[in-house]
Image (tube, rainbow, N blue to C red; front, side, top):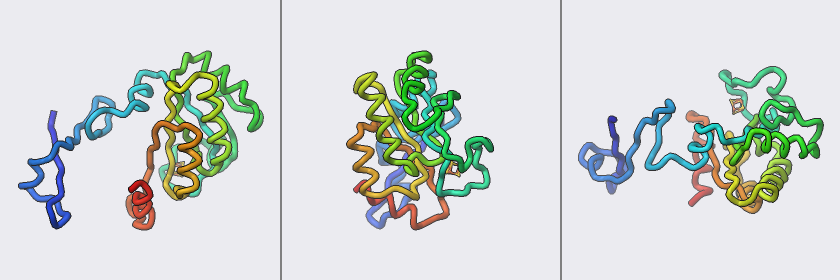
Length: 182
Ligand code: SF4
């Protein structure tokens, strides 16, 4: 397997010499992706089919031309646990039943952007953690537009385990938000 190593020098630049001196290793995985160090817990449970897909809403602040959402979901405030549609916000029995039926050991929260409906998102995270325990692993995908201190605190307090970003690589303003983590 081909390995790449990255390290910045004192001038904050990658050079051939410094590239050889780091412990950070970027590798491709057998799942058509790239990783640094170990595969995150959320990915492990996803590839083994152990995760419930919690589609919190089809609402999203981005308009990506390649958006894969169906017409039924795109820009519509609909909720699905896997392919099971909830009748309303409080149809939580559907979530629990679906998780039990699929023997889920965790959930991946997605959309749309789950942060478009942050209180609903946190409500479902709490619900799943309360029902299935702390080890029920939950990760969440967000587009970054709605990332701020307040939303991060809400997610953290609700018990979220992992956060994934779908960045707009060309938007410098969004990259600034990475600073929220330092
Ligand atoms: S961020 Fe995701 S859900 Fe939103 S428009 Fe882009 S691809 Fe679609």
